[in-house]
Length: 355
Image (cartoon, rainbow, N blue to C red):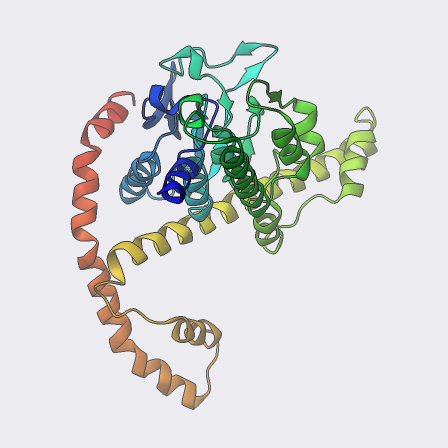
C-alpha cells in the first residue's frame, strides 16, 4: 500500500504551483492588437490533459492550414512536471519551436496578449515544455528544481520524501539532456530550491545557445543550407561600410545571410510537414491502410533517377500498392479533416474577419 502511495505522489510531482489550485491551461491561436498570429498560445497552469488538448489543436490547424504553425507560445507559472515533459516531447516530435513572453527593458511588448497578467512568464515546469522546442524565442524564464506540494508532502516520511525528490530530479535531468538543453541551465534549475528561482538573462541565452536551433536538428538544416562561417561573421562585424570595397563585402555577406535564413526556414518547414504527416499516418492511416514500408520507400527514392531493367520491373510491380495506399489514405483522412473543420469553425470565422 505504501509503495502505491509513493508511486502516486511521484506522478503528482509539480514545479511552481500547488496542484490543488491549478486551472487547466487554455490553448488558442495567439492574437494581439494587430490580429491573429501563426502561433498557438498555451496560457495558464499545466495540468494532466493539456498535452492532448494542445495536440488536438495542432492537428486541427494542420488539417486546415498545413504546417503554418511554427511556434507554441508559453505563458505559464508552472504546473505538473510529468505533463510538462509529455507536452515538450510532443512539441519536439512535431518539430515545433517554443517561445516565451516578449519582454524588453522590463516592458511587455505585447501588453494585450495574455488574459491574466500573472501568466506573463514561463516559470518552473513551463521551462520543461519550452525545452521541447527545436528552436526557441525569448528568455523570460524562471527556473527551480521540482518539488512535492506541501499537502502531498505531509503524507510522506522524510525517507519517502527524499526518494521522491531524487527521482523527480533524475527524471527532469534526463529529459532536459535528451532535449539538448545546455548543462548550464540544468545546473541552475537543480541548484535553486522551490522557494527561490533563477531568472534566465539575455546574456545566458546568447552564451549558452538557448536561442539557437538544437544541435541534432541544426545538422539536418546544415546538410541542406549554406551558412555564414565564423570567419565570415567576424568579417561582417568588423568591415567598414564607408568604402566601396567595404560595402561590396557587406552586401555579399548580407545576401548570403538572407539566403541562409530563407533556406533554414524552408528546411524547418519541410521537416515540420514530414513530422505532421508521420503523426497523422500513425494515428489515422496505418491502422486502416497497407502503406509502403520503409524498404519499399527507400527503393523508390534510390531508383527515382535511374533504374536497371530489373529495378524498373520492381517499381512497376509497386504501382498498384502505391495507388491503393494513396486512395486508402485519402479516405482515412476524410473524417478527421471534417472534425477539424467543425472544431475550428469559430476560430476560422474570427481569423477571416480580421483580413
